[in-house]
Image (tube, rainbow, N blue to C red; front, top):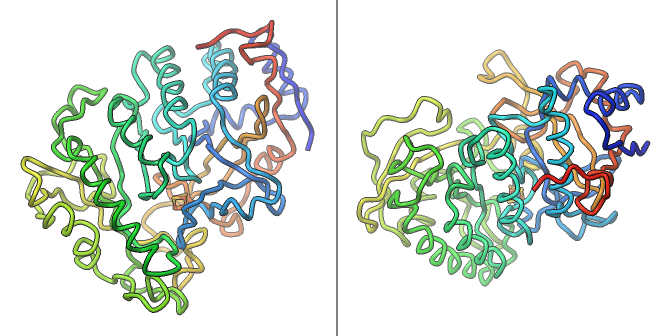
Amino acid sequence: MKILKLPNSSTADVLSFLDKNNFPISSILSNPISAIEGMASHVNGKFVGVCARECVGCSADAIPPKNAKDGIKLLTPSLLKAIFNLAQKLSVEKTEIFSTTRLNLFSGSNELDHPYCIDLRRLTSSYFQKQYGHPYGSISSDLIFHSSPTIRFKKNLQKILDEPLLFDNICVAVDEQIPFRNKDEYDKYLHTLVWVWQTLNAALKMQLKHSREEKHGTPRVILNLLLPSPENSYRDPYQHIYPGGPRRATTYKELTDRYVKPFVGKLIRIDDPIPSHHVFTTSIGTLEYIEDSKVFISEAVYEPVGRANTLLGTPFLFSKETVFLPCIRTKIYPIDESSFVIRGCLAPNRYSDGEISWEQVNKPSWIDQLEDFILDISNYREDSKASSSYS
Ligand code: SF4
């Protein structure tokens, strides 16, 4: 790969430098970056997310840390600051490299397990505040998680709930993706859920502030219920939650009976209207034991992309019946404290960060071109003399 060390000169100079070196900057500007990975590794010639949860159906195909033979590259606050310094420089000429409607900070890792996740959200929020006059939580910036037994996860969840302007909704995974090796591990997970549900109390009661005033006092938690579609099923080795344990749920009722009801009581569907922009919300509900609670309910099916293709019996194929069209996503992957790469991926639809094969769609040539470059932005670091000093 070719390393491009970007000059910290005028916007026109930077754009022309990128252009002269055949970096497809105009394609990035027309396909603005919609995800910045928090943890990455280089595997089989491409950058992928790294995630210790190891979900069996991970649509991002994030690899477990033990498989990151090339090491784990972490997005640090100083790298993110340098990236925003660059973005701010480019935006002087109305050339915004980031999507202003959807920017996912962790599409291939479990955000709350990341050591800097709160700082990264704060930085992103400052960038949006400075550039557009509103915090990060005003755009599509959901906090999405699988419950994790780590102390870091617990500390981060507690902390982020004190800064509710940093995110839009909280999406809680209510599924059976974590690969438990035995009953003990599963029981520990259930024990963590007791804590998670208690910690989310104020959010469930809609008491968290939102950066958009019209969203104050509206549901803030999305319960993401995931099952194979009715035509699909779990493949043989994945029929049970752990070897010798219960079979994986095949109905939404089973999921809520296992992961909602024992902790916060029955999930009772109510007739509230679903906001029009909530494409995957199927109903609104209240929780039996939490007074004045309301949650969004999303009864969804696995997108058979990434690792879900090994979890499910039938792999995914586009057909005339496919409701949403695939779309290009551009994502940043960290390399080190001063450099990163941008990859162009094909997502199954414009709401997903999952990745499908290009074989099913004509791949534009700039997607391969992008993979030739590492962008070195050491000139944009705050400790660089020439820095534009974004903070
Ligand atoms: S689904 Fe999310 S939490 Fe699970 S392995 Fe993938 S990135 Fe990690």
